[in-house]
Length: 149
DNA sequence: GCCAACGTTGGC
DNA sequence: GCCAACGTTGGC
Image 1 (cartoon, rainbow, N blue to C red):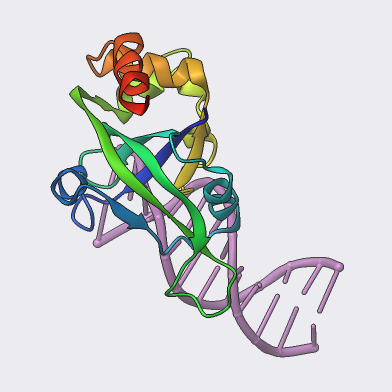
Image 2 (tube, rainbow, N blue to C red; image 1 turned 180 degrees about the vertical axis):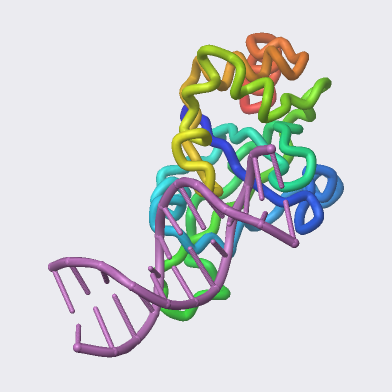
């Protein structure tokens, strides 16, 4: 399983919107590197949900629920979208500053490429953020696997 | 609101 | 194919 980070401006599409709707198409991505990441995603992968601009914090964990298919709003056929569903809300949002000042997390891709809206997250980084968010990653993952079976 | 970073566009 | 101009993102 791979781990990702998805950015969204909360006044455009917030974590609460995803929780309310139960799933959404992650479309409109128009950056080649971000698109390549979308293509790599497999249903079951987990993605940190980050609020950019306002909040500037990781607020939840989404699950990739459908693989990349052509973005229907794109006629060129170059761009793709995926589908995501809410998985867990963090008990405590993890601020960008908390990430930046952490020796491990300060090296995340998000700081190398601040403008990229889809980035990869290493397993140890993901686990650390989930812990900072107040969740027991191992037990949450056990629940996930039980649900899957 | 400013501006740094950086991707895209278009003239040459 | 270079690179200046421009647009966008997103932290501050």
